[in-house]
Structure formats: C-alpha cells, structure tokens
Image (cartoon, rainbow, N blue to C red; front, top):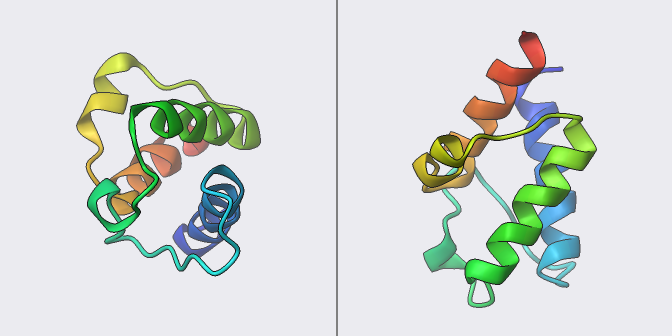
Length: 81
C-alpha cells in the first residue's frame, strides 16, 4: 500500500466521520479546515482509521498528528512493520 492508497482510504473515512460527501481531504487538511472536527469526531476518526487499517495508535502518536499528512506517515510506518 502506498501513500496515495492510504490517503484515498482516509478520504473515505473522513467523508463518513464528518458526514460530508463533498469533503476533499488532502495531506494538508487539518482540524482547522473542517468545521465539525472537534475532540469527539477526532476520537471517531482515529478509531475508524485503526479499524480500517488494522493498527493501533499510541496516545503519543495521536497527540503528534496535526494534519492528515502526518496521520498518513504514521499509518505507513505501522503497516510496513
């Protein structure tokens, strides 16, 4: 799985979590870009990503990511291991 594949999956997850099929997710997308991205939806996003990719994040990793690009990086590291 490459970076583009991961981003496509995250795009679909975000559309579900934020209930917005018109949402366009890029690596630069951050919570400031999506009005409904709050602490509760952040937890839902993380849980859905973990389920889709079959991975688990540490609390440190969750706190580290500030945009989708950083989330993609963490996922790629975990699925390669």
